[in-house]
Structure formats: C-alpha cells, structure tokens
Image (cartoon, rainbow, N blue to C red):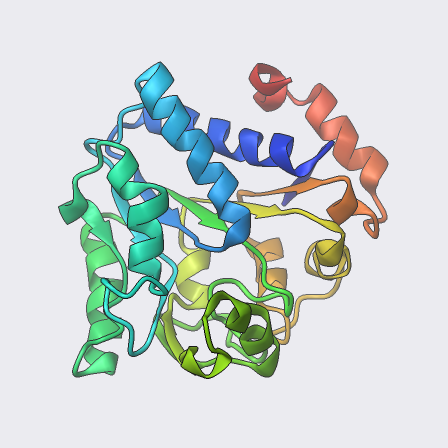
Amino acid sequence: MEVIIRPDADSAAALVAQIIARELRANPSLVLGLATGRTMESVYLKLVRLHRESRLDFSLCRTFNLDEYVGLSGSDRHSYRHYMNHHLFLQVNVDLRNTHLPDGMAADLEAECRHYEERIRRMGGIDLQLLGLGQAGHLGFNEPLSALRSRTRVKALSPVTLRQNAPLFERPEQMPRRAITMGVGTILECRRCLLLATGGAKAGIIARAVEGPITSMISATSLQLHPRCTVIVDEPAARQLQETDYYRWIFDNEPEWEPFR
C-alpha cells in the first residue's frame, strides 16, 4: 500500500481522475471498477471534462460498480445505476451495454450475485478498482464482520451506514435496509486498487484502515494485503496518520508520480 497526500479535496480528486485517464489511454479496453458517493462526484466531473476537452475515450472500456440497493430499479433516482448514468455514463462515450451494476430488483438475489461474479470473470477480472471509504471503514457495503474472502452477496446495512446515507433520501424510511455488494475477496482480486478519501471526518478511519491492524470489523484494512493499492487523501483526512513524512516523500521522489507533480 502507498499513501499519497494532496493539499485539498479538489487536487486529490484530480489526481484520481488523472490516474484513471492514464490507465484508460494505455488500455482502451480497461475493465474499470467504480464507486458511488459524494466523494466520487468530483472525480467523475473531472473525467467528463477530460473526455470533452482532451478526447478521453471510454468507447471500449467495461465497468463494474461495487454495489446497488436491494429493491430499487435503475430508473429510481436513488439507485446507483441512476447515479452513474447521471454523473458519468451519459456524459461520456461509454457503451451502456458495457456498464454493469448488480440488479437490486432481481427475483433471485442469490443467483444475481453469482451471475455478477461470473460476468466479472468473463471480462478477465477488474483492472482498476476505484474505492471510497464509508464512515465505518467499509468498502462497498462490506459492513463490519465482512469476511476477507467474501464474494458478491446481499448485506444488511449497519446503523452507521443507514445514518450516513439516509439524508440522501427525501424520507429516511425510504432508504433500503439491504444492498448487493462485491465482496472483500472480489475487490482484492482486482489488479489495482485506488482509494480516495477526503475531509477531516475521515481522518480517524483512514488512520485505522491504513496503519491499524487488519480486521474484519473494518473491511478497508484488507487493502493492506493488496499488492498494488494506492490511497489518496487530502490534508484534513491525513491528520491522524503517523507516517506522513514518508508518504509525502513517496509522491515527491517515486518515478511513477513524476507526471503528476
């Protein structure tokens, strides 16, 4: 794992967008794992801008999202399919047939989870997985006590997640209590992980995820096991990290980051 600290949330999101753009230009058929949430909106805005101003081409890439609410159709404006269409898919030249999210309306949810895993396998696995970080330290909806080898499945949402996401609904009681999520094991099989977290509210959980012990209580700690994981944070989110001098040295000195300095 490597940690990159940027001055503010905008520059952190810009770096994430630049990394995705570089990977997409190097491999136009990239299999890209995607995340939702308010933190990601800035990343997608910047990718749309790169598409329009620098001709970043999405026409051949394939995408898989981390999760979807159970009981919401893709046309529901609270669904993650709607979120992705609004913030990215309908703003760039991606083929919608190549964009995949779990079907929260599937009659057989267990079969849908198996099929989602199979679709990922048929595409050759995920090349680059974009990740956010929940307040409970979860990846996707891998809530506390999610097994580190878990696969795509239905998860009951924790009280912390319900409190965090309920304000996005007109009435809190509208928020689904379950979601389909990629498993921790599914995420760890991707070739590269890219996690973005910003803001002082994330400082404590970032420190535990990056520098704390690996535990199923905080699924993000599993990324310490990944051979190629980059965590990008802004200064407020980095406040409780212990090795910040080393993390800043990485960005200033490692050749990989030279194009972005």
